[in-house]
Length: 336
Image 1 (spheres, one colour):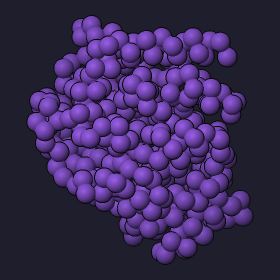
Image 2: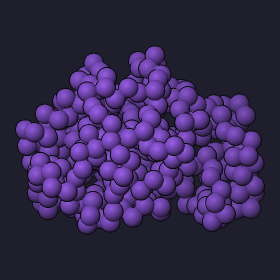
Image 3: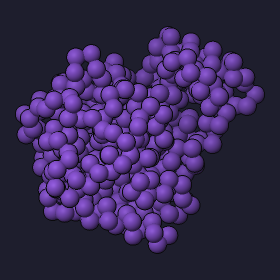
């Protein structure tokens, strides 16, 4: 489809006048054909325009989002969420957008709730959170009312094991529209198309990443296990490569070191990491957090290389800033 046709289709999907049967047939046909970068950016553009505006454009100008599409089935610890906290603790505004996980034992929203972050707050609280914490979370159902008309079709297709364009769109329709982004995808086939789509949405800088921690496995983020692929966009559009861990100053690890568990398990791992006790978190998982943090800082134009970003992230933890930041969360939401 042309960009205009994709935008018109997205508008129709959000309409109550189109039956769920028609929506299912369209989404399945689109997936069977194979979505293009132009179609994905057209859909993303429409759903960004229909989202509720949180009114934090000044933070968005220098802010970043770090997230993945999900759907990789690998069961890692909450690496992207921890990276978001780490960036915020280092002084970078993080405008995180997401939903509850369907396939994970401990999704991003679950871990945030366990820390005391409220998923749904009044709009002015987002600005206050950014001012106090350099962080806020936009809970997708609260910002995309149009999705109510699409949800029945999505659920019906998901029950059949059918992926659709919506498996890609979540990280692309952040209502705050941060200018930089580190986005993980569940298949390396999507690296270039999603980079092209985000470029078309006028983001300033960022990278699309994909990992294969074991042969035949897939990961919607970077790790120190297996092979990592990156594709830059915006000011980083020349970055397109298989990532060399040594160039980031890190060593490889076993894929088993990346695994997460329940909400309580992952909360304990996060605190172990922040407090630098190193009793629970394997070295490979710690290094994988630093790798993604380095890539996120580079995506946000805060450093000149992933290696420099890794060092800055490590210094943030070693200084105690992350531990203090996690404590500040409790005080902020308690006083609301």
